[in-house]
Amino acid sequence: MHDFAGCVAVVTGAGGGAGRALAHACAAEGMRVVVADIDGDAGDAVAAAIREGGGEAIAVQTDVADRASLDSLAERTRAAFGAERSGLVLFQNAGVMRNTPLVEATSEDWEWILGVNLWGVIHSVQAFLPLLREQEGPAQIVLTSSMSGLVGRQNVNGVYTAAKHAVVGYSNVLRHELAAEGIGVSCWCPSRMDTQIRRAVRVRQQRYGGPDDDFAPPRIEAPPPEAFIPRLLQGARENRRFIFTHPDARDVVQEHYDELFADYDAGDRAAQELG
Image 1 (cartoon, one colour):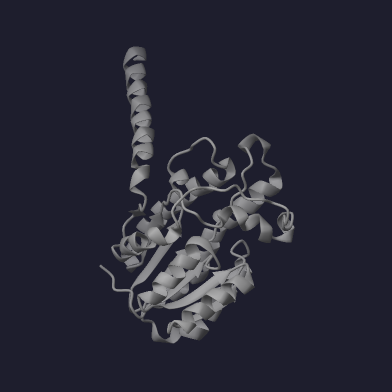
Image 2 (cartoon, rainbow, N blue to C red; image 1 turned 30 degrees about the vertical axis):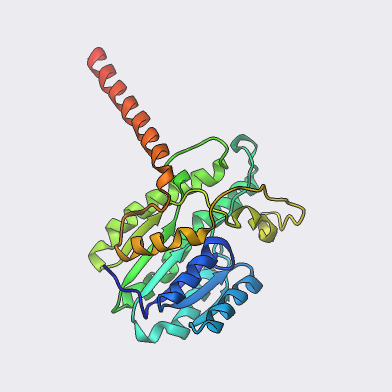
């Protein structure tokens, strides 16, 4: 099991919600934190709060849907903390959502949500892989998917679900490819939390339609992300393939796979009947 004390933690989407909670938790564990967020002011505030609490942190305004922005983030990380090679944990956490039915989603909806939720993952790994390979301490990648990345459900944005399914597949293959290099890969599949993901449209990039300042996110009753971050960090330390932090979601996954194997059995029966 890894000891992350003294490592560098790069947290995308760290200006609010689960990313902010994760950045503070990493600092509390003695990690040096790179706070990355598209909202520069929000990222600066999180980094300042960490420093005021005695931790080490820098903030870098980052658009994860833009590969050049991720390359710049990696360069800033190397310049600030890269010389010691004491370990690096990349938490690719940035995400967006828009509550639009799948059949009504526009091309801009698809481009924005896939740009952040899928291409953001790919860009982050590509940009940070050289730094991860240089580490003498722990080297770990934690990619945020969702329970929606395992189970397609009603009342959950379909474009978001498609992106999160892709993250699960990407994470599974990446884990196998990097294992021989000693780089761990974990996929976090959280369920309901009171985060700011539905407010992301307020900082949506111009190329995807620009901010929607009039958008009023729906109110949800869910625990704060701080309730789940300790479980996430424990899963990362243990380099688990999947990190599950919401025990109450287990039944949903069980039901999904029961249906999957029922259909598999039906296929076997059809094969026998049809010869």
